Image (cartoon, rainbow, N blue to C red; front, side, top):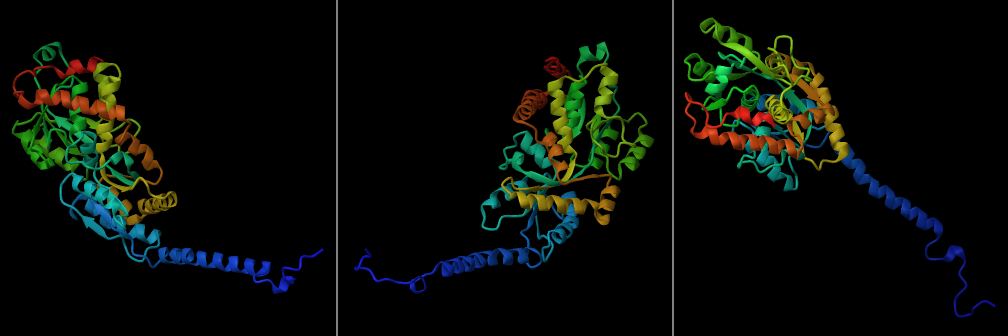
Length: 385
């Protein structure tokens, strides 16, 4: 029997019918999607992008690339204006890298960082100024350029030279700056490199080589390389390119490059370089070749990374950027291929520790070693493992 304590209500008289509930849920869904659609419309033409931090001044190589990249990237990403540029001081990009890391905690963090390879080398060697973890960056655009070792020395090691252990003075900007691959390469060849710091520009290094203050210098293979090399050989015919710091697998402008270091080592030693120190050289050579790299934070959303990679590929194919790279003798890498190249610049921890051990061991001998006397411990002894 039906209960008499509750009123008998028909379905049309109930407070909320099933049709009303479904209609309400549909309205809620539409209202939730409206902000997303609005956000997409903002992204496609109305939103002002976050700034790009530049590891250098406007006149630096990174600054030049940032100026070229900012409008092209913003256009492909459908921003209303080009990316604002936040320039920094310092020649090696460490200041920019630190600023990029610190500002990731802000409500509107920077969109990316443009940094040279010297900022990576500072991180690799454990520079006390570095407060960022470069291994956590995601590269999407790179402009690379190899370096060349030049000097008036014989790479053919004789028994007499081995006994004498005379160091080869190498002009460097700092004891472990961008000239690091040349130092490691000479060590692999058993040449006992001794860095002489204070030569931060190619012109300063060339002047030191002319007056005999150093034996070896490292020059970038840029648009002025051939002119500088011709002028140097006119005055000092004995100064010759020794090798180029370029990986055997790289695809740079190799037609006019001197033979790469790996080829020279095989010619001189009739074998492959020792694996452990050779890995250190490959890391240093790859990092030193980076003239400007666009990095994203490690925690970037996958769809944002994909969009930036596509925009970087569009930028690399842009006629203006392509012409600038060709004029500067630089090679562009964009999109997903940057990850493989960056793995050579920022390798696993074992290789980084090997580089730091090499620096630590040699720094003890470099500190007080006279330039005209044998080193206390021949560096070649480290290459027998």
